[in-house]
Length: 485
Ligand code: NAI
Ligand code: MG
Image (tube, rainbow, N blue to C red; front, top):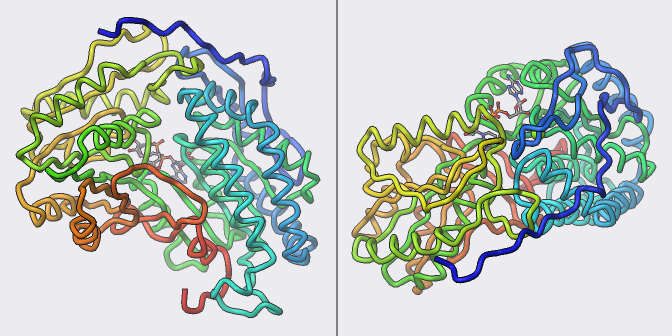
């Protein structure tokens, strides 16, 4: 038991001004939606934060038309240098209003304020800064064209994002699209629309030409209307593999281009020679960051057999110090689960883990009776065939498996339909490189986990999707010609 307890250190919510209701952002103005408005709640308290318009197919059509008009009349004729100026302006406003964005993100999503403040918002601004720099240098990106005749944009891009990193996923989508000269219609997730709507205000504040960015809110049917709209040149989607497959089917045989960033079931491999206390920190960050609502979460811990008991003991000791609770408290490590539906899914999979014979462990922690909560959970004695070793839980649940040889570690790590990320912990560089070469995963971290940078491409193999976001590679998804990429 800790000798001292932490006093509450709540962040004030006074900086945000949440309106009772929100419309859609189309053609540079907030307009009414014609679907059935829905409520977004604070998952830590179940308090209703605001009512949000639902875009029906006709509203989506208006947004796509606004994006097309802005594309042909303004944005496709705007020089890269000027596009860059707008993107720099947006990046600076995000920094200036960072506290407001962090508080709003935490209220709407349930993630700890220290994460929205130190990770989501600064990285979102960094994505705009990074892509602002590319806007006038696309001719040098090795994607076709030349400095005098840079590669052409695609036109109107439809973008659909999930609820786990609402503002950050918006930045991953909008920044490269605009830098390359496209206009966008973005649909945020139905449980977390508020930072996207605040971003619409940032576009107004920056004086971005109307229609370059349009935000349509709603759930699956709104996303589907966007996917099926014939006026959209490209769809970029981040979310579940299930919906990704539906979208791939919907655009097959059309001229619409598609990039998909889907689920994952990452292996975090710890060799016996690893620095164990550092590995424990990486394991905790890998699976408990953002309540485990992370597509690249290190949800399968593969431990070399000889250190298994020692590592699990250290991990349990560390987990007993995690603070679970009020996301607005600056000391909180684990916040609320994003929705009742997600909580139900996590519970169901954790129960299946127990029923299939794995050993379940959680530290003692008190969970509020209001809101959606799940304790940090570790399963030991997990077999490859267990559902918790195969399916994406998307919650704070770690499955521990063992291996004896490096070849066995690689075989087990790759035994998944996914291939988004992986982690390797070892003192030996040669062993790290040997392992990384054999892992079928888009991103491999060595002696660290969950590091993100706008300059570094991110994306998957197999059922984790296709296409890359970030870096020079990410630009390729938003220009018409691609040479030697
Ligand atoms: P989802 O894939 O349904 O939601 C992602 C986005 O797609 C949301 O904006 C949603 O409104 C939209 N959408 C839903 N149906 C659509 C359709 N037919 N056409 C177009 N857009 C559509 O994910 P959901 O239901 O929120 O979560 C279910 C599971 O998916 C999670 O438990 C997790 O395992 C996984 N997931 C993975 C994510 C990732 O980043 N890899 C993100 C979110 C969920
Ligand atoms: Mg919400």
